[in-house]
Image 1 (cartoon, rainbow over the protein chains, first blue to last red):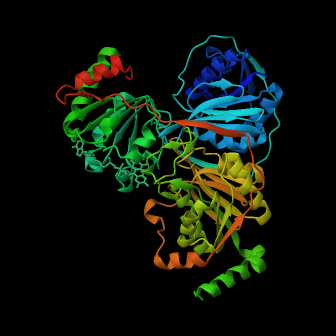
Image 2: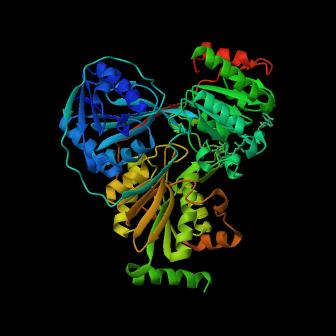
Image 3: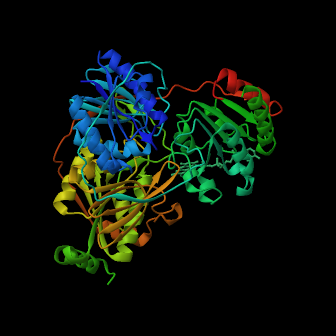
Length: 320
Length: 271
Ligand SMILES: Cc1cc2nc3c(=O)[nH]c(=O)nc-3n(C[C@H](O)[C@H](O)[C@H](O)COP(=O)(O)OP(=O)(O)OC[C@H]3O[C@@H](n4cnc5c(N)ncnc54)[C@H](O)[C@@H]3O)c2cc1C
């Protein structure tokens, strides 16, 4: 009856999201007087989860699960769910877990709720707060079936240390077949992704042209941030589509979002509003972004950003 | 040839007689959502979305998929049906999809309860009509569930590619790419298949806008209304809440960026 989490990993290492959902599950488990079990696939150091309150790890090692496959992975999680007799399963909101989540929900007959931003308000029936209308509203949703599957929004709960010794159990699974397989992957390995980034530096049409992105990249570099842009910037071909954020692009829920030369149109804001701290730099004090930001500078990006870069260099050297 | 009646006959003929030999059957799921600029309000004690004065559109992610379906139809021959689970107020949105070029629209006559509820309705029709390719969107911009396409795949045992940004189909073999964090992945799969599309599967500039001729033709195309089969109740909505109004922005002088760094470090603890 333990709460089961799927602790996602990449190249043998847990993703940070896994620690966040472990922390989330631990809070829920304490309220229900139960414990947290994790299922993980091909990780080097399953003990790490013990730091976040997980008391048991079902550890699967298999060459056949080397590449992510939503069907195969969902089936493995289902087997873990049956073994533990878990009626609550918790996953993150990464691309891959959302891919497998919808399949898993059908396989385990669970009521499935995504974009969950808070620990359950009630447990009987499970009632949670979630983001809806692309960050323009919250919805309280409840699960009516016996099993529930919750996908937790990134950065909504935070990582909470809670030292436990995790019991590691090698878990033998049967592996289903699938007609879908990965042929190749194209991925920039040296860049922080928007999904994983704690800080996102984003540029808009106010930057005038692609040749001016040098300072945006430099600022991102210093902060260890990912770069993003508004929709017109990607439509104009100044930046790749993968950087387009907003209602029709990627959704951002970083810790810090810095908008430079972005007006703050409703569709842009909808996609980035769940970021914790928002900063805007814009020449126009009337730009709508100032109404949604925590901090703002009214000023010309071409003057402010270079100063900010210099200031941050000094700051980093003093705080290193 | 392009006279509407002939066209329709032709279509029926192809579908009933020759479909198994050569024509791919595509179903595009169309979610009927408030326009991106809509003010979001709720009624009935915050339990229902307030449709008053709201303009509804085809969900942007579905619109990309619909255009891709039209290309498949034009390049390699396919029938393209569109489906929506909703009450009669969604019909203008379905008519728009017909005007863009879909052959037939299907509306499952019910107010959807949750994602699984929608998926079950669609899956049942996908099975009985043997669609080869089902195109949904990555997520709808209203409830943002992001679950319907994957659930349809799981319920029908079809293959599934999420966040699909390109697709080529050759004799039932599929090469598709999907967006992953920081890049893309090329996958191979087979029909029958469900995909969840998004921008990239076609570009913004490729999106079809209905023209006069399309709008005229759409009026005469079939819009079939089907009774729901199952009232799934695995999850339900309790109520809604609007985000707290934001506190005033703290303005920092452009002459004093160090103050911004200080605030971000000491106050916001964000750097
Ligand atoms: C259906 C639909 C979906 C959409 N989806 C999205 C989406 O997902 N994401 C998105 O971003 N947009 C989206 N949009 C577009 C959105 O409405 C806006 O048009 C867009 O966000 C504006 O981008 P921008 O802020 O870069 O450009 P602008 O609105 O042109 O703003 C540029 C800003 O830069 C400022 N500026 C100019 N010069 C300087 C300078 N030297 N220094 C500092 N500031 C300067 C200006 O004051 C201005 O505020 C969508 C629109 C529609 C209709």
